[in-house]
Length: 119
Image (tube, rainbow, N blue to C red; front, top):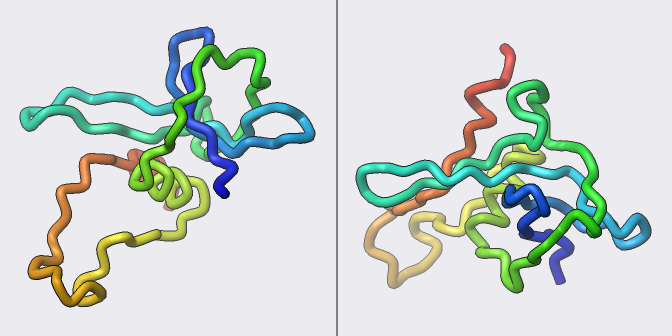
């Protein structure tokens, strides 16, 4: 069972993070931003302290949560883990599914973190 929480805060912001049961808080908090696009919407996962912080981190107590989504969409969870750890998680590996005829993906989640990495 995953310990990733997807929630709406008292501020109205939507966040995703790792639940710490001992502290009753969400750690490694990322802000979910909805971006209008010509084909609908896209979702960006950015550090909660963006633009002043470049890495996902921080802690928000659960008493600041007004709503916890029952299910975390798997693609959102994977993108969060990827943004937090820089490890790519692929749910769509071409050739892994013999019934899959195309390796293309209509991935609507955008990770803006790569734009802010210093090289």
